[in-house]
Length: 320
Image 1 (spheres, rainbow, N blue to C red):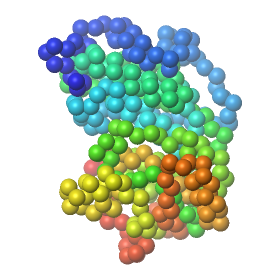
Image 2 (cartoon, rainbow, N blue to C red):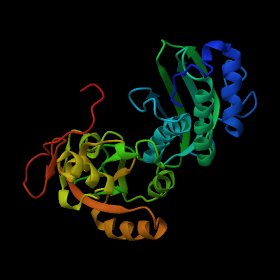
Image 3 (tube, rainbow, N blue to C red):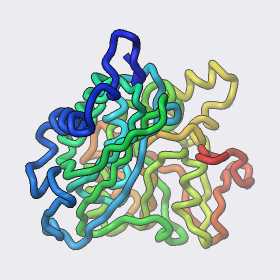
Image 4 (tube, rainbow, N blue to C red):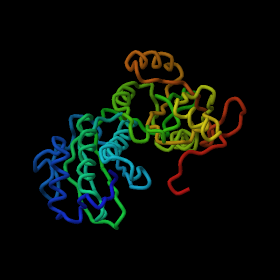
């Protein structure tokens, strides 16, 4: 059943705000700690340091019609909300701590679907050690549903974008492209990999791939670095190959711009790249790692090594 009710279903319009909150909190289960560390007051109260030097924050949303459609189960939509945020923490090398959940709910949203959404979010949060300590519920226009999660985490060192150096080697985890065939909903954020990379001083910069490598790479580079990409080395997913057969576009193009890969793109000092690659493969035997290029001084562009030309494709644009 989709998010909007059928004639036989119960919509949230038949419930009070308090009943909606009770059902969501109950479905979130153990990831909702008791007050005062969890829901029940104007603010949640919790320790400020978590035993690590840095506290990091991120926020992301899912919107009906943009990030999932009416065929999507509540479980998968809720998990996607949590995992999108966790992927950002992974790129910073942070361990999840706590979060705030905001729900904008149209009156025709199915109450059972909403509970499933909370179950999916709660399960994904529990797997990562993330708690949901509060939030907000607001009525929205008919036919709409949106959820926003603001997440906190802790890290001993924070990986960031725009801190690579000329000569660094560019790596990516996993495989790229064709996410619309299912990975956009069912993916595992690279939290363990991100924390491991954070502990390696030779890793100089990192970002997660949510909008596609072609879009996210310039954000990693900043305005004073170029990337030389070996397009033939891109780890193209089987889903990208299948999509290429369906629409006639090159599979490499899908790997560059489809988006929602939720892999990690990172740079490593050249003199330590071989060692890191070997150690990573030993530490994460089921997570691929691929060397896809190098960094040089420039103006924030990505070039194809074979042609010497800037990339002709772009990743996903939210307002394109």
